Length: 102
Image 1 (cartoon, rainbow, N blue to C red):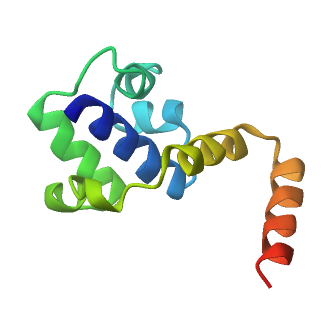
Image 2 (cartoon, rainbow, N blue to C red):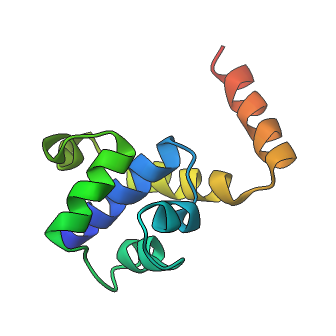
């Protein structure tokens, strides 16, 4: 359970900031697939890298572990899908969402 929450929280924070897993990995001085391996539950970061992740995402370790604020799985999946779309399609979907929320 903890591992799922940890991975989902990392995905949530990263996507909210519009950062690719690859860019985040490289910015942390890790291999290109480092964050993907964490998000796919293949590994967890060391404590020192976890603190670097928090600093990179501009959250405190306490804020990182506020799992009660996690989006539903459905919303998290939608965010992942939206993030993977090309820029123009993503812009189109966002405009539809904005139109529906008025």
